[in-house]
Length: 93
Image (cartoon, rainbow, N blue to C red; front, side, top):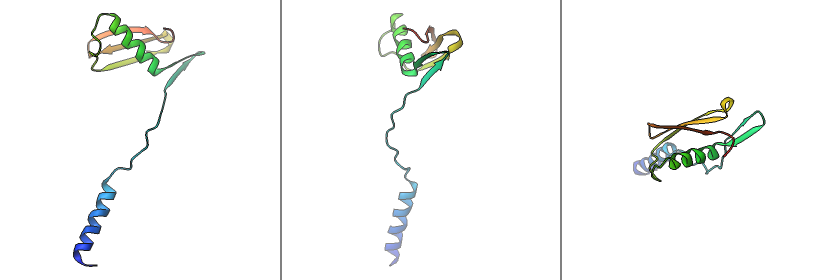
């Protein structure tokens, strides 16, 4: 093995080591359960968006959402676009 072959092999090994292992897409769902009630986080997010749009905001105007689920109050509080605040029922539509 000459020097060029060694360099090529070294480059191939370094490239293989530096690449992160590809992880297959994994489907997941997060569900909050509290005192016999349950709701998916996805469903709460949908309710928050619907509530926001029902206030007259334009569809597609959401840049970021923070949702604070407080099961003891049966309420999800939210902040959208760092300024619009509101709340929705956590377990019921």
